[in-house]
Image (cartoon, rainbow, N blue to C red; front, side, top):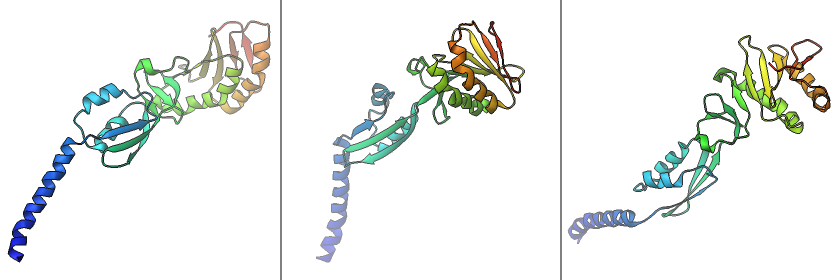
Length: 215
């Protein structure tokens, strides 16, 4: 009896392994993806048509330019849920990339980029300073309809905020916090004024200069 069991046991193990792979080969895994508004499902299906490994699918989605991070949850043998958090675009970068609201730089298709984003024309080393200007000025500039804007530095390193209708603010390089506060303080009166203006220079310690001409 014992000898018989020793002979039959490997056969049973082999049969179970065979049945497992047979079921796995014929079964279909369904993926339920949420939060991925910019995911190219058609392309994903084409490239992952024969893939059964959920980690491979998750890795493919993670490599999508819009994906910030994702959570993978297997509901049962055939159902996998993937929750995706996408980047939220904050500004367009000068080389075609997009800066997220968390300061991450990503490179989506140009057709997927919103058209009303501000533009940051600065090197990577200056992205933090550039987005600081956005954080400080966005609410006030939108309120007076001076949006979207472009932020860049001149060769002199002076920071420029380029406004719609050929207008601009110059903030220089020093004491930027106080100079931006002055800008916000006079912004409403400036935009309600009947006088034509093109450039406001905030590089003076306790004053500013208004010019009719843009840069």
